[in-house]
Length: 179
Image (tube, rainbow, N blue to C red; front, top):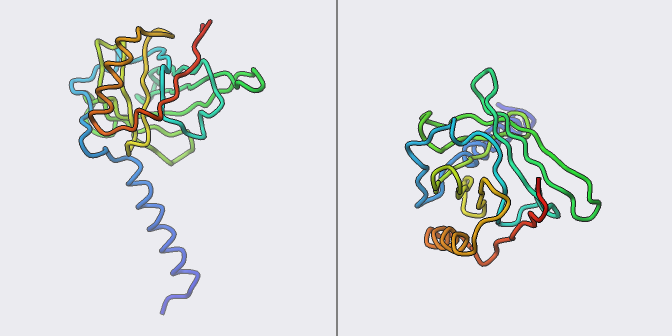
């Protein structure tokens, strides 16, 4: 007979395993970009718009920088300016391919062994991208420049909306005078 403590440990481990597995999946109807050339994706991307999440709330001038580590993983450095304090904030993580090396489907971690999906599903000559995570509550519109035209913004938002993202809730990031 199992003790209550052992049973609780087993249930906890099972729950964590299910949670971890569900955070690295692909939302229904989303297809990662293939072929995907990591060497062309590396460098700085500016966040043009996103769906709201606590880890980016209150930030402006948000950028993500991707660099190759010696072990083949990616260094992910997300940075922004806290709009209340005007102080810079950053988070460093690592990413690796979830499946094929030529597919825009990675998993990223900012918290040790816990990974979440990073899925590039729209990529315009490595200048503009739409990215999501394991569900459609996550959406980022990224660009190589701090701003893009209204026409391009509307085109990318229309693509995301057609795939089921709640684009009415997008937050447009202040990138004025961004470096």
